[in-house]
Length: 430
Image (tube, rainbow, N blue to C red; front, side, top):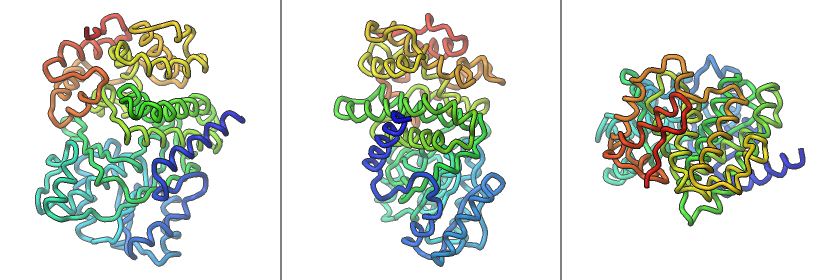
């Protein structure tokens, strides 16, 4: 318990270093929302899924009214469905345009928060281009705002799931439902002005959502650390070790005892550190592949499956990072070998096995073939998506960067290995 408390305190200090006064987090802090929102005006558009968060919405509305803030349109706008379908982005945009609120408030998990980020962009920049497609990529929103002297509406994110850290970051994932392909806006302009996360709210998360959220947070930590540069290595190492220890030491308690707020707080802190991580570096291979699996798997689950296989591919280039992660896994009995004595591909395989052992320990799948609905078409779609210019940033973020001409030769074996669990077919670049 003492070690857990020390890890939590370290996590809190890192998060304050990251967000300062723009973020309220901890247990039982939801009633702060009225005070936060009062900085921006009297009319708030609250976007939330009422069926999932009815009691939380009531608390939020009460807190707003205590500060003389009322709902724009006198109603709650429905939030997004999983993976933020594009149609939901346009729907929420219409609420913004019709009700003209002073401030936007998104209450929910990553999908609803990402939806409001993108809807805010369309509502303000729609006269220049009303198509969300035109903002996928890096820095395009900021460029357009500057060109047309526009500002996005103030935006407050209330997170309810320990997972994506969407409330803290510059990313908005949006899915085209017909093709089942996810695309990404990456832009500092869409970071919520303020954020709030009451970790006690996560006690209502069901088992599968808890597991998916943790796998998402782990993916942020691992992928960024794999590709981190020397300038941020020490900070990323601190974030990585603190987050992984909190996750590994608390996930089983959170699953078996959902109302254990100590465990829930630990997972909230750990996944928030994932948000810090993706603001100092970028995710890469596993996230890229996950965008093509949205029709059959949650984002976290897809990333959790793919990261061990990308680990083996990256291994010769990231020995320093693998040894840090490997020691954490070894200390928690997820690796039987002494990672201090391993190097190169052998070290990568050991860490990959440790990550797989973690997933097995919480009942998560470890191969693509285990996902209901998986077909060879998903591999084909993932390879095609990797060649799209709008997702090029994921290729560049890899510690072993690929370009479109190398996708078939090197990514195909990674995906085939992830299908069966056979590391031997993964090719390392010379």
